[in-house]
Length: 467
Ligand code: ATP
Image (cartoon, rainbow, N blue to C red; front, side):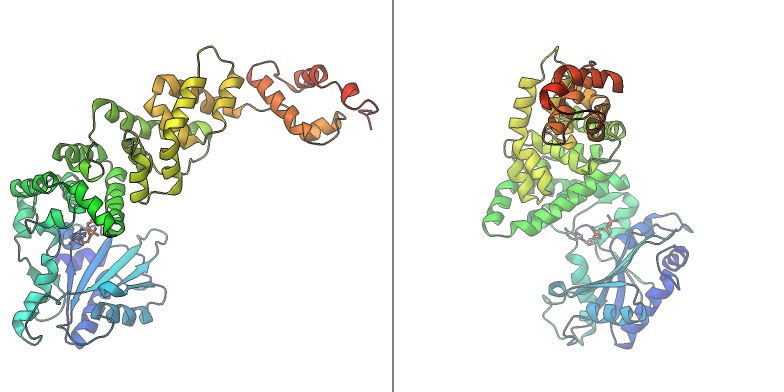
């Protein structure tokens, strides 16, 4: 009932009907084939957590179809999604063949949230008994739920008959929701998939839950057993990319959230940052840098007047990795954007150059010339790490110097009688530097400056400015 009322009121990107009617339609299609359909995962968790009669904001709907091992070539989830897409051609269909999973995606439209419906096929491959056996009916969805991360994410609501609306709770998820705790399903879970450590922390912090004591012990056990070494071994076996992709996704969720500092603090306390590198931990200086980078990034954008093209979560991650010698290798393993990898790769030499060149009592044009060769994210990264020795100059550059231009341009040079050519660029640079140092403040003073440094009669003896 709660699922129905919540979904009926939920403003999704569906054009002609509401979400509940759509799910009922998929359930009917599944029922006609003799299959069972379930809502699983986050939607069920969030629904049970929300106060009665509230509309639960759902990001995605995860469905699992149990086809009792009927011989559908593509997987039952894919078949249902394809059938649905014929009725909703505006939805984009994505098929992940190897997992027998399909997703239908409706892009956001005005006032309506985007919608993604994921239809997976219950995985029965480990189950040894004949499909027709009613025991299998419960067991294949049970098996599917057992593969999941935490009890609170392993709940399902059946949409098909008999008993549509039945809550399947094989592992005590509803009780854990009431106790407000994150509990893992099996002892080896974190060894199998270390990204679950990051997920456990993310859910605990986001929902205001605690980590169940046994779960915390499993996490510590997995970490003590040498997770980083394991990851490196996986790298040799070429299994690392899939894991690292998931790890990067988790890191991005954590660093994007308002509660990133709390999550990171808990990860650090658990020793879980050793998944990234055995030496990685957070001291007071790193905390300050990580807080600073978010604030300063926004200030830089405001000062420079354009976005810097690097998301805040990524800058935070860069600051975290920057303290490690192996930073660019880790960034490469995590498949961070090329710009981040290069920034971290050259960070040592960038900072050495900046520290050497940015000396007290320099002319503004010297500061400008030192800094103009770097992009703003690079300068930001170096600034938050050396706020006094680099940050002060970068701030002066970003707020003031970067906006100072020569008061006259190439057309003006032409009007003054200078012959167009490569010297224009040089003259305009010299004028900009003069403007930076306060020698040139207006068009008149720029012309006078040119007359002194680029006398026309020497450059072009026959030229006549009035031509
Ligand atoms: P959110 O509200 O953050 O989207 P969610 O529970 O929907 O939460 P997803 O990352 O979308 O989280 O995953 C959907 C479901 O897939 C989860 O509820 C969980 O059951 C399962 N799952 C996701 N990642 C893992 C994992 N690494 N190991 C086991 N199960 C997972």
